[in-house]
Image (cartoon, rainbow, N blue to C red; front, side, top):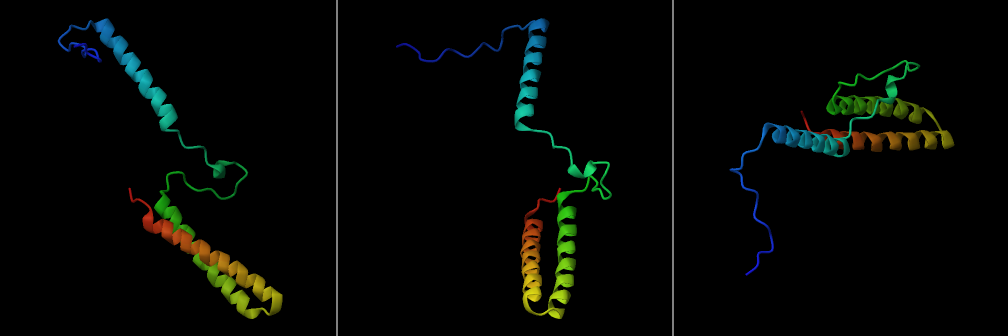
Length: 119
């Protein structure tokens, strides 16, 4: 009966230092190639521009960013609510529309904060 697959290489064979060094170089090159395609580096932040007044520290984790975003949206919600109740007519409807967008954004930020992985 003929065998479909070849025998695995004999592990008891002696491998020269040159061959093991060559194998290590090949393994390292394969690892670098896979890391290049499967682990892309983070793109540079847009807030690192020199013409920007405000910058966000790149070492801040996503949980902290989301918490601050949620607090900012809550503050904007309070401000637009006060403004909307002082207005009448179409201006009030515009302010209420802005309020609704802020509330939906706040819900999204809070949901993202609930599911963020803590490091």
